[in-house]
Length: 167
Image (cartoon, rainbow, N blue to C red; front, top):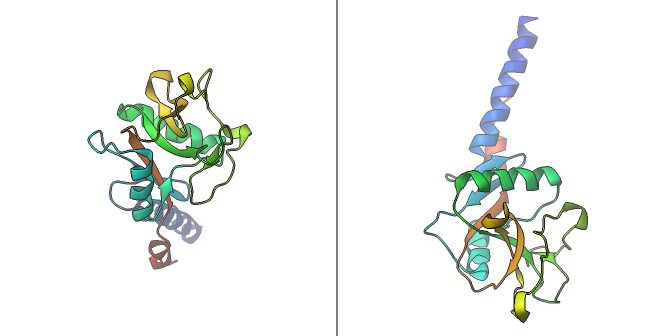
């Protein structure tokens, strides 16, 4: 009985350590991914942010589930850093939203969070990049890609850290 209890405690500790150690410093773990929420003084255009995320081994965040979307939105809200670029864009075809150039998967209509009336390419402007809009409770908005905004990167946890754990 004691051996079983100790095994369960050890396993729980190892899972916690993997989740914490699997992300680079300054990144936040959630499930099997790490997220980087840029600082207020790190604002970049959508293209610069996309490059910054790629250089760190990731991409601008894309959402695969409502729980992931909810978690990121809640975390962004707590930071109070304003708007954040997300990985969605309709650069290639107006109105056809896809996740960043890395994978190009269509934005799943079952997992969206557009603010009322969005996307709208307001007044005919070229609003081809997706952001989390702070003034609308971090719902999504389409905006001009050249504007300087905070951004959210996403990457998988470090696999080499997982391999170092012993059972």
